[in-house]
Image (cartoon, rainbow, N blue to C red):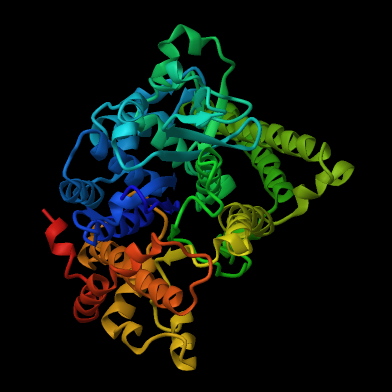
Length: 532
């Protein structure tokens, strides 16, 4: 264990990510390295984002509290299976009021704090970092003041220049938190920031929304927003590279990479559904109306009601007069409101690129307005949730795979890769994939089921009926088994850039083969031990 160093990153992706990474973690804990340690024990660097941070922080806390890892996996899987976090949050929304109004993300932090981490703080991890396998841990978020990563980082002290010990930055270069402040940040707050995805949540403000704000030193800091780590790096690759660099610099005699293997566990895909315009949803009877037409009808209604008031007055019927007056007042108020709203909209649009032609809005049908608004909203959401993330994903992967020094030291572990028709199929056809690694139909079908779940913070009753949670947990287990076997096969054929520690990984091949054979027959064979 002291010689073999593995880095692993857990991508974002809600409960799908948390469960898949939990499966990966549980399987690594089942493979023995040497005499008594596991592959999981050999992981010395861990980086997590969003949903992946649920699993990463829970694992770190288990190490700090010396909890049995299998018990931790069982506990977290039970939590993910049963808890609908968004439902819990909305049920307690009134408790999340801040100086900025109601805060959904602050409520989420308190739920994580109480239900998942039992009020533990970052200091609990800092205090034990020298006594656990993980020496560099980073739960990643985004600084919404500078557009930089914000890292809830726990690292061992490293000797620099033979004189002083240094720790990894908690925060970033613009907002660096001292350990005496950072130690009071709760794990729930760190997770809330890391999983605070745009459109679903508002930024979490530091220090105002944090318990650490009670600390006089922290309270003096200017407030800034923190959001989901996936905004800048949804795979959490950069902290792995930075940790490796620190390790290598401190090991002055080392010429190669300080990590023998980096595992990127990822539930996202390079593929995406193309854009398509929104279809009209308003009924035709409403969709054909315009603001101008609506105002005309409102003015006509006022005129008619005014005439009726005059007739009723001369008829001396007070009840009719009263009823008509109420209706007239309501129509008038609605007309005035419509006029004011229209002027406000036109005024706002006049200050944009539309300029003085903003009054065109009055003559657009409601269907046209619906189309203009919905298509723009859809494209913005698509850019933030897919286009930008996939672009950043490609750049992060390129940083690793285009660096020749990482040759034979990388494993990508993705939730979708063992579905029918994925890359394995062409490799099997051209003979570059060993026959025994061809996934069975049971694995292909389970992978399809696991990969198709959306990015949510809950499993629906329908999901549970279809066995989605179990499918995702199993996918994390058998996919990492497949990828490690594939990796061993490659480095046995091409031994470039390896050292003696890679023999420890190669020696695990028989265990991996035995497990893979069981997965081929029953993809869920490991899942039952983690279900309560």
